[in-house]
Image 1 (cartoon, each protein chain N blue to C red):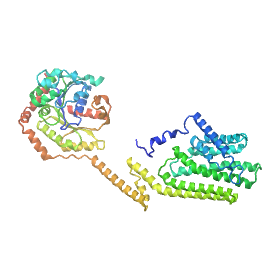
Image 2 (tube, rainbow over the protein chains, first blue to last red):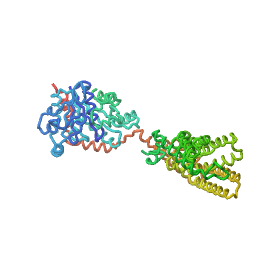
Image 3 (cartoon, chains in turn blue, yellow):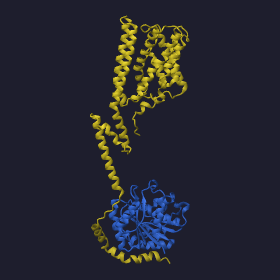
Image 4 (tube, each protein chain N blue to C red):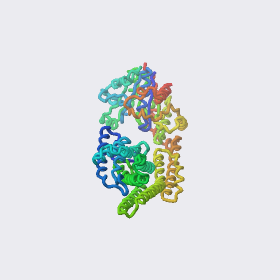
Length: 251
Length: 362
């Protein structure tokens, strides 16, 4: 049985894609076969973190949704992005960064059921242990579908007024959809905060467990999405916090 | 990068290398200046001071002193001693005509050379300026006290002549030349930095020294007209010198009083800029002054305290996270989503979807 984990944030800029990539990397470093799917069709980005050039991917998620190919044809093996640390495998299903493709999705839409079939087929074809879904911010139809289909949902937020209301809404929506495991990740917490106080306040406010609190990190900013933090700084305290998150999402 | 104290870069950078450059060039400069000094000694050799047959009116004494300040004791010594010997040589008396006087001229360059070791170079405050003046005073007195004592010890001249015909004429005249000429020379070489203390004392200083110099030179002329006794002239000179030194001391103290609050305010402003508010209490003493500086210190102190308070409040505000949610809005937003047909269908299918996607991998 495979786990489907959605990583979502109501607003952009929370570090959602980075979190997805690092969680996927940690699972693969633990010997699992992992799929990462970029459903952020309107503003794709996770391929950059895995160092995948747009031209290297023959097909994107868009091609599958328009019936041009099978879902497994869109998967790119990006295990090499982890260097020698990858004991399992990582497959990335990128979204097209082509402006015309993006415009077409926005204009024409697509059959949303294809997406759920795609998740299922992908897990079967690549014999995945875990599928990590990097969702689009907000609560549009494909995001709702991703949440509904997931065994676990990780809601990423910053300790920032802009994120509080939307996070609350996401948590309530996920509750309506009976997601079996839901957790909050607080990202980019400024060093002036007491991390434990943040954890308590957030879990009390949303009545939802907090999987981890990640302090703002100069090293992570310095990496600027060029590479995977968990690989580059394997011994960093942030990485051990992310390992706890990864374990919590599977239990 | 902004530095404190602020000194324009072009002003000091090339000058800082004076005296720390290549030794060959240093030696050449000191020897050349020594030659100029010697030639000037030869020229001035005919114009003796009243009552003297050896001491002259020699503004050029500042040359070895300045070489000492620029290149250190050795440089000052070389140009002083060499110049003196050269003066005798050009005059046809041979370089070793008066070895103890050549030695004294060397020492006159040597003593100001100690400036760099005693904090008198560069001159940037009243303390270092006073140190410089003391060195110049010593350079004009100690070496010539020595050479005069040698003359007297050898029995060449009586005591009265040694005092009024050698030591006092040289001491008074050389001191005044040095006091008048060395500071502007150092200013030109970038070794006198016009910070507020120096700016405050400079005007008084030049006024005093130029007046005294004028008085002294006219006294010499009057004596030459034989309207004044030689003894009276040099006693007058000593008294003038003492008055000058007292005047300088008083102006130094009063300048310090004006500038000290500005200096400590500047230091404090820098500390505040670096985030250190702990010394603001030190301003209380300045703040109690009845003048404008007192007002400035009091205002500055108030300002810093309110800034510190505001910053402290801001820190406390940030440290505790408060999460506020508009629950009514959330309920309304949630209803908008859950009421849609898509969501209703999705909710029905959700469990089934999860089972199909995850478990159905047989």
